[in-house]
Image 1 (cartoon, rainbow, N blue to C red):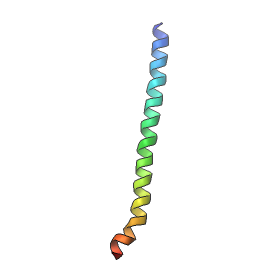
Image 2: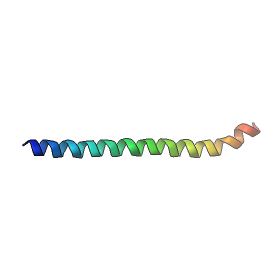
Image 3: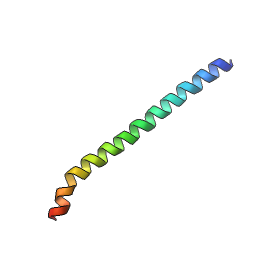
Image 4: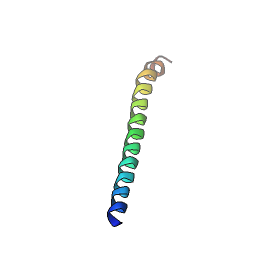
Length: 45
């Protein structure tokens, strides 16, 4: 029973970390793209 709990916890931890990493990467990519596109307008404006 304890091995099942350990395994399920590790699976949950892996999924949780993967989701967190993907969200963080998406935020960075979004900031990078928006920053690149909005910079010329800010300078010209």
